Image 1: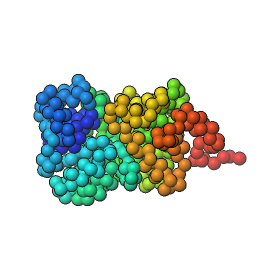
Image 2: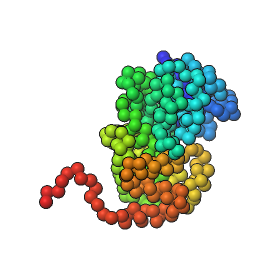
Image 3: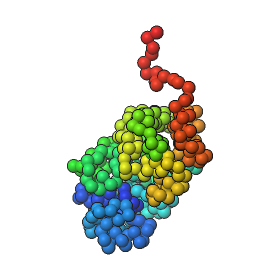
Image 4: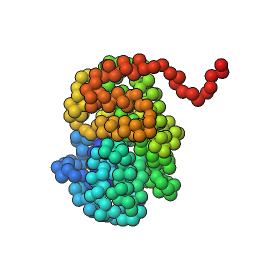
Length: 337
């Protein structure tokens, strides 16, 4: 049994708390919101995040950050990506050398283009920082629907240790040394999911969404490989797998926000209606900056940025994508003549 503390009592943090508790571990959950903590401790439910899901009384919810960091075998950071750095900065004084931190959020810092693990390491350089990613909506994990994900770590020893902690009969965990690819796949898929949602909001069909997903993973992989990730990662669970589920699921906040934008709302109006952090909005500008750094053409990501931040009409953006100069899909095999 491991002692595990989760930083963040949102839907994903709560779902992982349930998973780890059911796996036989001792679980603590920290939240900055005192009202949320009191409500969960009183009712044993997180009604705004996971309605109808019972939370066992053995899972401790608290607002005390210091006691939620000290002495734990594993810390799981599950705060929304815009708050990853600030939370890590607050955690830093309480972290011991080599303490394992598993980041389960997804995003890229707009001002620095840094991945979440990089942000945490910058604030807590003495920690062993890892990541968990894959097609894993909290609503389904909390209901014990079979799910497969991947743990990324610098050392195989740490990855295998975490694999054993998280794996269950309904939660299959693979390992990978490619944290760069995993984190970029998990972050950039949110930008493509916004586009997929816009397509749905415009009333387009399966053909359009399939094209966005397929060409979207091409952009994600090109940018990820340029940043040092492995191409194989982007066609695995934390790449294509996560992209598919985020583009097509009723649980996806990024797809829902995109749907509302496709129906004519601004991105701020869409985020207000979704009532949760829409990670793709925060990663979109960072993705464009990374693409520019590497001299890459990222047409879908570029159009999403123009819709979000320049007020471009989504229907016009689709037309521009469809009427780009025709080209070969790839050059993996040469022409015979």
